[in-house]
Image (cartoon, one colour):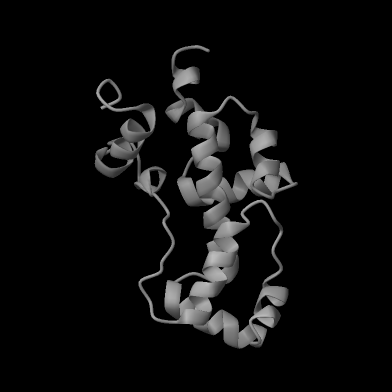
Length: 151
C-alpha cells in the first residue's frame, strides 16, 4: 500500500484489515471517529467542541453549564447518544490524536503527551494502554516508519 499510495494510507489499511494473531484483542487497530450517528443535537455540539480542542483540559462541568444543562443530565444524554461518558470520549479523542502523531512524527512521547493535553506521563500511559492495548512507545515502534527504518 505504501509503495503505491502513502504511509498514512498503509497504516489505515493495516488497522482496518490486519489481524495480529498473537493479540488477545484488536484494540490497536481501532480508529476512533466519534459516534455522531445519534440525533441529540446538544450532544453533537459538545462532541464538536471537544474534538476542536484536543490539547485543552476541558471541564465537563463547565461544558455542561455552557450548554445550559445540568451535569448529571448531560452525562446521561451523552452516554445514551455515544455509549461513552464525556470523560471517556475526551480520552479517546486525545489518544487518537496521539496515535496520529506517533505514526507520523519524530516528537518525543512527552512532547506528544503535552500536545494532546496531558501533563502526567503515568496517567497518559495508562489511558493510552487502556484504549490501544499498547504503551505509547510500543505503539510508535510498531507504526512509525522512521523508527521501523532505524531513523
